[in-house]
Image 1 (cartoon, one colour):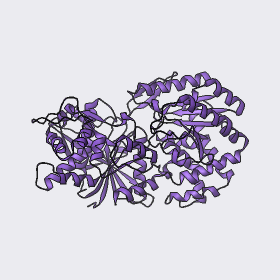
Image 2 (tube, one colour):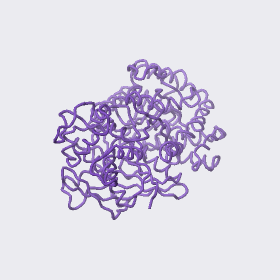
Image 3 (tube, helix red, strand yellow):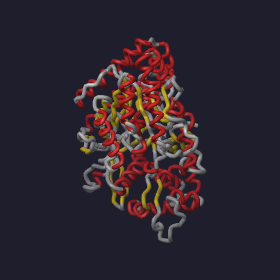
Image 4 (cartoon, helix red, strand yellow):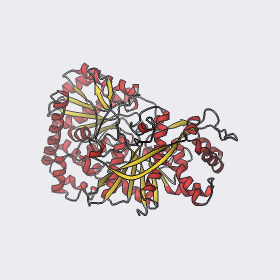
Length: 587
């Protein structure tokens, strides 16, 4: 059964508006990947956790202060329970798991299953029943237990469901890295051994594919080894075996840089960390970053590792607004089956492209009026910015010089801005960014109307990426691994105004697909220069974009058409999954 399946592991997966099983870009990318796998009939099965309490619902007060509310949802409305159960050992306790199934159906009817692991079962302790409740919740102990369930429990659940022959295990970020320990144990047992050998290492490495998604240190999970041995006491020999079969330098990286060894009782030296990213790197035969630049940055960060690059994409049919779907259905009827056919969007008349855009824009502004009580002008150029609120994404770069921004808007015909994005509950810096944006909006008043929409989700993402006129993105290089919001915008004819980092280095053709803020960095890790980037942003608005929008509408629409034809046709998960198939899954 299921011979040659690809097992895709991700801590979060975004599938539907009513399923709060994701926090942001990683989960949305996972959902889009699965949709395209279904479209392409790739034999894939996905594994994640069942977040009964979701991530959180964001609330903002008048000053932009974020508070979080838990999210309750009726999982039976979306999922069906499977009969399989397995267990994992945590601190010596048996924690039972079940799986709930969701089916993703592709354009031709092919289905890809997504299995949600659930620890909320009778017989588990009250604390253990909550281990799969919250996405990215709790302390390090809670997070490590979740990663045990995802990695070790996920492999066991697949076996229980009949997936005896899995061709590749794809780790979407390092959260599932512990699956490698389960595969090593399987390999040793299959050979009639109780200890791991070099042959087992090579066998497991050949089975695993690892995608790293961020150069930001906080995105790479590390756990103190005393906590690891407490949670996985029965696995202590696994770590000794890893030390035996890896060279010291490689092993020291897995253990967070410390070069000491275990003592005879198998206890780790004090202060060591288990680095989940390095564990995945060392036990995967194919490793990739998510944009060409990110591949370069990752090769420098993980010196000595072969890190390829497969640039991210988005699922075209999911992120294309209804007006543009209707337009593409008329002029490019096979675009869902062949996203590359969107290159023919250049032949669609300017008037029809603009009318489709205005329909999408009116839908967005109606949402703003309904949810925020603010009436915005559909004739004004509208900038959009919607990302996870984190300091390095610099959502407030636009407001570096409020006086100049007012002047630009007054002289050029007017400007309004829409923001959205959640900060992680423990990210105080991200929360402060939201407050700074809201304070700047208050200072600008009616001269440049700024609205920060709360509780960013899939629905709002669709509305914003299709309804604004220009997509703004301002990360501090080289921290943007890829970014996908601008790709969604491009499918809807919305060009980007972005820092040259991540995917935009590949997608930017000056004045054709959009515009750049600043220049491409010459050094791998350039020094922050917010003032220079802000000055470039203001010049682009004042000298190029606003005049084009108000004084040369045909020229602006030509940029819109090229955004679809050049970027929408390429930066999609159909192309991305095809590359994984060739480079990693079936090579």
